[in-house]
Image (cartoon, rainbow, N blue to C red; front, side, top):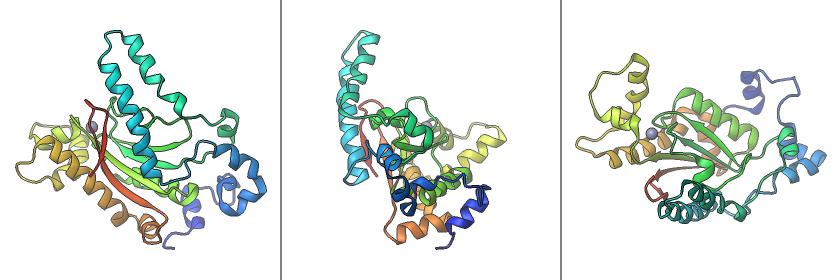
Length: 244
Ligand SMILES: [Zn+2]
C-alpha cells in the first residue's frame, strides 16, 4: 500500500514503542482474543452503513416523541429509552483498547452529536468534528489512523440542516482570517443560487470525494474494498439522516 502501517506509526511517533493498538490487528487478535471479543460486543455483524441508518430510525422515533412532550426531563427520558435497544462495551475493556465500527466526519455544532443520532455507546464511533465538516488536514490524518490502525470499514461525512459554517460560506460578511480559511473549501464547491440545504449536501459530498483524493491511504483502502466513504445529511428537526 502507498502508506504502510510502519510508515504511519513512524509518522505518529509510535514505531518501536509497542504502544500501538496491537491487540486490534488481525494477527494479534489470536494472542488476545478475549480483549478483542470484549471490545466487539456492540459491533454489528451486517453492513455498518445500514446499521447506522437502522439505529438512526430508532433515534428519530424518540426525537419526534420528545418534540411532543412539554416536560424537559421527560424529553430526556424519551431519548434515553432508545438506548436499551443497544449496548455498551465494558469500561475496563475500553481502558485497554478500542474497536469502533464506524467513523463520522461531522460538524462541531452542538446539535449534531453522533452517539445520539446513531444511538451508539462509547467505543463504537470514531468521530472527527470541525465546523462545516470539511476534509481538513488533521481530520484526514485522524481518519487515516482509524483506517490503518483500527481497520475502520466506514467513513460517513455528515452535513446538517442550519449549518452555521455553510451559512457563513454562502454570505459575504467579514470573518476572522482563520474562519476565512475554514469556509474557503466550502465556498469552492458552492453552486450559484444554491439554498442552504443544497449547499450543505454539496459540501458533504465534496468532502467525501476529497478524502480519498487527498489521502493515498484512504484511496487504497477504498480501491481494495476495505473502506466505504459515504456523504449524508442530518435534518435536526426530524432527526433523520439521509444519504447524499
Ligand atoms: Zn454545522
